[in-house]
Amino acid sequence: MSFRFALERYIKDPDSQGDAIIYKDEKYVVIKDKFNKSVIHYLLLPRDKNLTKLNPLSAFEDDILKKEVEELIRKVKVMILERLQREFGIEETEEFIKVGVHSVPSMANLHVHLLTKDMNSERMKHKKHYNSFTTKFFVDFDELPLKADDKSSEAHVMENLTKTSDLKCIYCGENFSNKFAQLKKHLTKEFEKKCRSKKRKIEVIEID
Amino acid sequence: MSFRFALERYIKDPDSQGDAIIYKDEKYVVIKDKFNKSVIHYLLLPRDKNLTKLNPLSAFEDDILKKEVEELIRKVKVMILERLQREFGIEETEEFIKVGVHSVPSMANLHVHLLTKDMNSERMKHKKHYNSFTTKFFVDFDELPLKADDKSSEAHVMENLTKTSDLKCIYCGENFSNKFAQLKKHLTKEFEKKCRSKKRKIEVIEID
DNA sequence: GAATCATAAC
DNA sequence: GAATCATAAC
Image 1 (tube, rainbow over the protein chains, first blue to last red):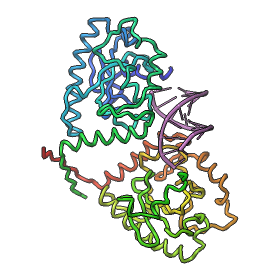
Image 2: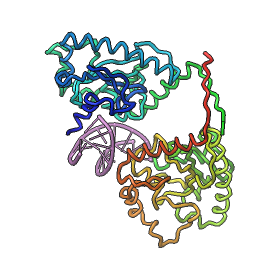
Image 3: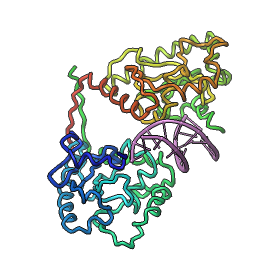
Image 4: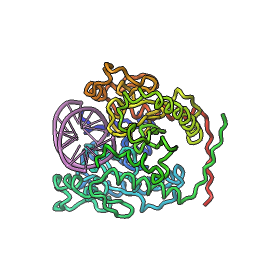
């Protein structure tokens, strides 16, 4: 089976996926993105055989699906903010969480991205990664479903956007042109600032 | 001036280089490698105008140079082990420090690498990076100067070695073939094991 | 040396 | 989607 169906196993047999599973019920699973592009990056997937085949730009024309997913998104956002507090000592609001879909997903199974806005991850490795979350290639969940004539439906246009858009800092808007390495440094600095601003005092005690 | 002379400023005016300078006297400087390939990675450079032009494989035919550098290496090794203890809580011996030169340096100014053996760094980005420290491309200081007929003197042979040698874990010898991403994960795990084995207790206290 | 970009093969 | 490899231009 092609890599495009790599998410299939999570909806078919979540119990076999260990701590990659953040949430599950009969109809949905929420998993950790294996190649997280932010400090926290989850995927929400409907488990239904038919729903999982839908295109993300039109899938949420289904009102029931949309309502149910909205409700689950609310829960997951809380979990994300709690984890951000617990693991990084960062107090944030829902504004710090991006929720939406890729215009042209590489993975076939319908999935919604939920991720913190830091974009600070080892796995964030090149321009296309970054721009797939920071340009119109990424469609906010609130904008779904898209009108059929929306330009965001044109796959080639969208893919080009991830290649050609300048790299701009999600925090301060600074334009890094195509200088990805410099953007990375900047994002790390911005995130560490966010951590420091909580003024955590870390005490290290040797017990052996 | 070409990038090949990027180290020139460190020997000419170390005082302008801030905390990149680990040690300096009239004849030598030791600096942090700007693109460190291990947790701790320093470069030792003779400042003399003539010495800095020498080829690393033959430079240490000069007995005085060799003796002086040997002495400085001893001092720097102590500094490295202290920093390893201070910053990472890791207790190690000199065996954990690699000292030597690249057969075919990219940087023109004579420099000796001193680095911890973890090979665990964000800047370790591809096979050539790794193999330039783990194959015969890297010549241990103790083996210098090389006999003139040593194969290690053949630049093309050496450069090929960094491209074609299998990736092998420096800790356990596991062969990762050309699977660099997997080697990286493995090295991170190995290093974290080393940290954990010190059983540090970390207490986080919010003060704001 | 770093870094961007393109390109197979999975 | 990931990952390896090659290639300019600095």
